[in-house]
Every structure is written in structure tokens, then in C-alpha cells.
Image (cartoon, rainbow, N blue to C red):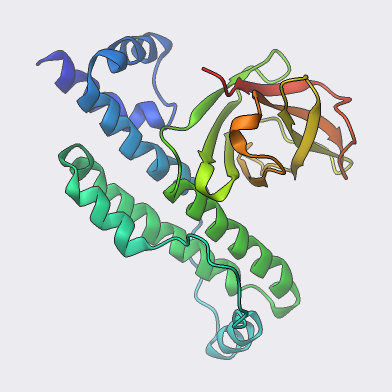
Length: 260
């Protein structure tokens, strides 16, 4: 078996962070030297992160489904023209590249699971319809940013405060937005949350929003930057009071530079 074949066999588990440290080191030594393997990893990354939204589907009653869907149908509002996520175009682009062909089926499966997850959320009790609608909008926005990302996501570095944590940051310059997905962050009590900070060239921190994680340590955040993305030199995540802080006060759990 060639080194490329060996690496390609490991790619699905690599993007899910389910490999040993020695396997990870082997892959990361190989990727800068092999455009084909690097492109395959880039194709699998969004698929792996979409799986974070997966949940078992639950079939609701016809009456509840009709009532909640009617309440959450988006109204036709005129908006300034901006890029929107086009599933057909995204899949067509994937098929044009031979390196992406191996990931296409997994992408379709992941999107199907994601769709079931949205349907499951919409079908919750009517009293939760507003919360469900917000979550659906968040997931659509997250996926839109992933679709327009500038390249491979940046892997955030864990600190001693959360050594097992994994974070990936997608940057979409065209949308002037980031999409963050995290795994294995410690769950927090009801009075605390995680807060993302955009770090400018002067070292000043601007809040990008707060988020929480589920019982498995998985969470996500969409960040609309007040300045162009290229203005910022780094991103950090700290533990803060539930509503967020004007400036960082708690332990930093993840960080990455935007300059390399």
C-alpha cells in the first residue's frame, strides 16, 4: 500500500479527530507534500462538522407538524443582495473535482441527517417554536458560511483549561463571517458560557458572541465581524458569565492565530 493510500484510508477518522497522536502526526507531515490528500481532507472537513447537527428523527402528529410549520414559515422580506447557500451548486462543484468525488456520498448523507435534525426540531411542542426557529436559522447560517469558506478551517489550539477540546474555525471573507464548531469542551453550569473574542492588531478583544455546549461538549457559533476578517490577527475563547463580558475575565480554553 502506498503512503497516499494509507493516508487516504485515515482521512475520515482524521477529520473526526478519532485517530492516535502518531497517526495524526503522520498525516500532518504528509499533507503539505501531497495536494491530492490535502484536497481530500478539505472535502471531508465540512462533512464532519455538519454531523454535529445530527439527531434522531421523531415523527410528529400531522396536526402539530402543520401548526408549527405554519408558525415558522419565513416571511418574504426584501433584503440587500448577498450570497446564499445553494445546495445544488455546492454538490455540482464537488463533482467537478476528482479529489472531492470520494467525499460526495458522505456529504449527501450528512446533509440528509442534518435535514432530519431540522425536521425533528421543528416538530417539537408549539411552545418551543420560537427557540426551534432560531436554531434552524442558526444552522442554515452556519452551513452557508461553511459553503463559502475561503479554504480549510483553522484548527484551534486547546489550553490546559480544556486540554481535550477541539475547535475549528471557518472564515468566509465574502460574508465577513466566521463559523465555529467545537467538540469535547467541558459543560458549564447555568451561570456561565463560552465567549469568543476577535483579536485586533493592537491586542484589543471584541466579543463575537457567547455559546454553550451539550452534554458531549459539542457546540457552534456564527460570528459576524464588525471589521473585515483580514483586520483581525487571532481568535480566542474564554469562560465568562452567562450573558458575556465586555472584556475577557475567565480562563482561555481555545485560541488560534489568523496570520499564518
